[in-house]
Image (cartoon, rainbow, N blue to C red):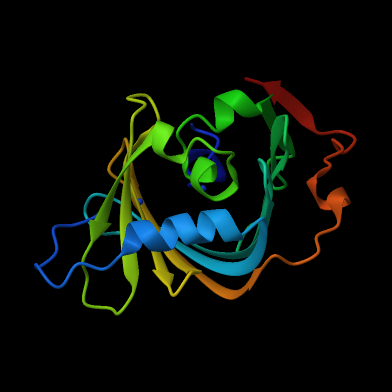
Amino acid sequence: MYTLRTIIVSAGFLVATMPALSMAEGIDSLKKFYNSTQSISAKFHQVVTDTKGQKIQDVFGEMVIKRPNQFRWDYKKPFEQQLVSDGKQVWLYDIELAQVTTRQLSKALSASPAALLAGGEDLEKNFNLANLSREDNLDWVSALSKDADSGFSNIAIAFKGNQLQQMELVDSFGHLTKIVFTDVKPNPNINAKLFLFKVPQGVDVLVE
C-alpha cells in the first residue's frame, strides 16, 4: 500500500515539460496565498501513479492546516490513515496496520510539501521557485527543494486567484502524485484539539 509517509513524513509533485505560453504568475499567487492564509481547510482527491503510468493509489480525504506547522490530513476512502502535527511532533497513524509512526517536526518538515503549506517564514530559504505555464487557466509555481535529501525531485502548486487548487509531485522512486483540492476554505476557525494526537490503546508505536 502506498502510504502518507511518501507524501510528507518521508521528508503528502513531477512537472512535465509544458508548451511555452504566456507565463502565469504562480510565484505571486503562492506568496499572496502564503501571506494571507493563516489557516485552511479542504477536501482532496489524491491519485498516485508509478513510472509506467499505472495507478497505485486513489484516495479521498480532508485536511486542515494552521500556521505555523500545525496540520491534519485524514485519508478516509478506501483506507484510513491520519497524519497529525501539533507544531512540535508528527504522528502517522495507519488504522489498518494498528501502527503509529512518530518523529520530530523538524525532521518531518525539512523541505517537504508540508513546509510550503504549513511552514513558517522559510519559503525561499528551502525552495527555488519558478513560474510554470500550462493550458488550464491556473497559476502554477514550481518549488525545487534545496535539500538534496528531501525525497522529492520537484513540487508544483496551482492556484486560481489566490485559492489553492492542485498539487503535484514526483518522489525519489519516480511516483507521480496528483492532489486536487475542493471545498477550499481560507482562514476558517479551527479547533486546536484537531492537532492533538493520543495514541490508541493496543497500537504499536515506532519512533523515527
